[in-house]
Figure 1 (cartoon, rainbow, N blue to C red):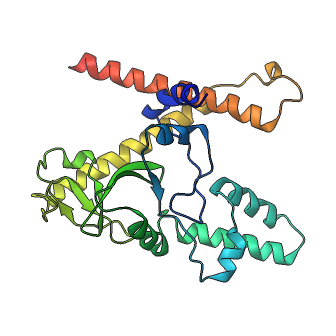
Figure 2: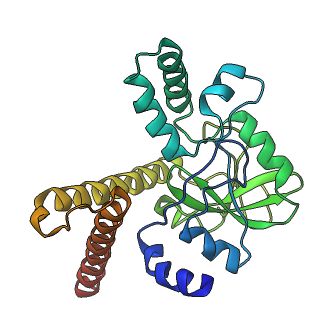
Figure 3: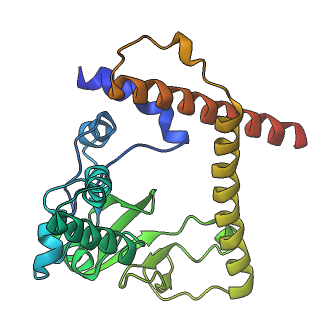
Length: 252
């Protein structure tokens, strides 16, 4: 059954997998079918979006919630007449706002401790998956932004703070600053712009596509409805990528 579930979601790799972090541990995710792929291939999956256990009010507000559950809790607390719940919801919302980079220093410390020397794994942050390894006690992420296409010597970027300004290294982990930082910056901006345009395109397509609500069975659960909408979104995303590939092939 696990193999069947994994095969059923492999096509989503071209558009993105749905993983839902929990804020209590670097290996703690809500178990979704997408996680089965990592389990079957024995690929460790990490994140660094953790609550600092020393901050009691945030620990209480976030609890054992996953990201999706926490968002629902915040909405629920805001609508409550209980002042304590309203306050808790505010604390949780502030936590999400203050850690919008999806990496905390406590999470970074836990990551550095948890990842084994020389381990090859996947790091999830900001809805992106990165290849990560550990060399001489330091975490490194594989450089994949298109701005580095012409930088043959730049292979890894160190992960040593939450701001994202790591040091670039070659394949032997020797410091190797980009030859033209301005070119790299423009390339990174192009990558961000492409991600943004892709998101806008999918959103616009979703808005333009009218859903025939009359054909949806009466009494359908929220979960079933969400699955139907997600399936439609996956189909449109896949179609978008196919069109992009066809256009690129014609240009070539």
